Length: 112
Length: 113
Image 1 (cartoon, chains in turn orange, red):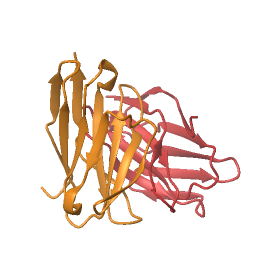
Image 2: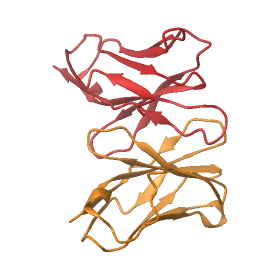
Image 3: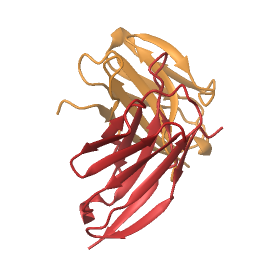
């Protein structure tokens, strides 16, 4: 499968715990995006990378969130001290510059 | 601020009918308007996209109509099938900068057999 992959697909955690999600983009796609989707809503932009550089972060991305893309390949999104309001689907998308964004299957997070 | 407004929230159509989903945008700097289809538990998948210099684009059974002066665009699905039952999202983005997608709220479409 040459599409965008995300791991894990589902994560249940207790409030206050840290979680980390991984996204593997389509090979040679230099842009990688993270979005968050809550139930019944469209995805909302969180942050994006061009190669290894994180170029923009949404105000939705509080200090508890951090994202990395070492070497411009896969990316990780970490949430520290999770809160119930963090429960959502976290989507990753990748694209060659200026083209269509291709989404992964998402990681569904439930914070108890 | 909701930059892309989508309606209706839900839609039920009989097989063979033509569901129409509408979107309106505020930011005239948007350059690219895609529609995504999402099945439960899956990520959004691109269906069709249009740029504002074109008033209509057709790909298979899917057609986008675009009205630049009204800042509105819509998706039409011809000869709808039960397999088209999904949530549909319109989106918009600029060509410059982050090119982040701004999504509408989504329309849950059900096609009855």
